[in-house]
Image (cartoon, rainbow, N blue to C red; front, side, top):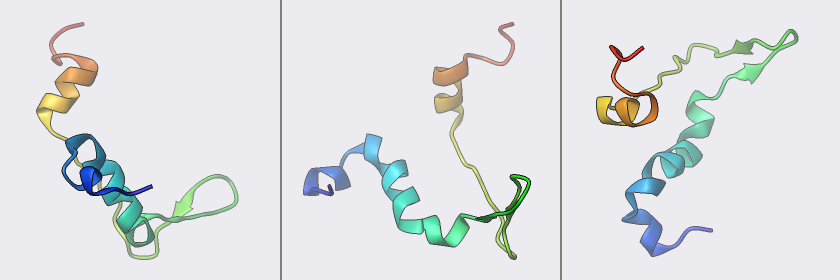
Length: 61
């Protein structure tokens, strides 16, 4: 359910953007499990701070 508070909640920004644009980027699943994108280019964007928070610095092994 969408509320006015969701518009200002940074934790809801990406999920909401995904909901609103899914028809533009989601490919069609084909037999064998691959996806057909019909001229669309799937792009995943994130920030370094989010990557570090999730996975740590790349030099830590």
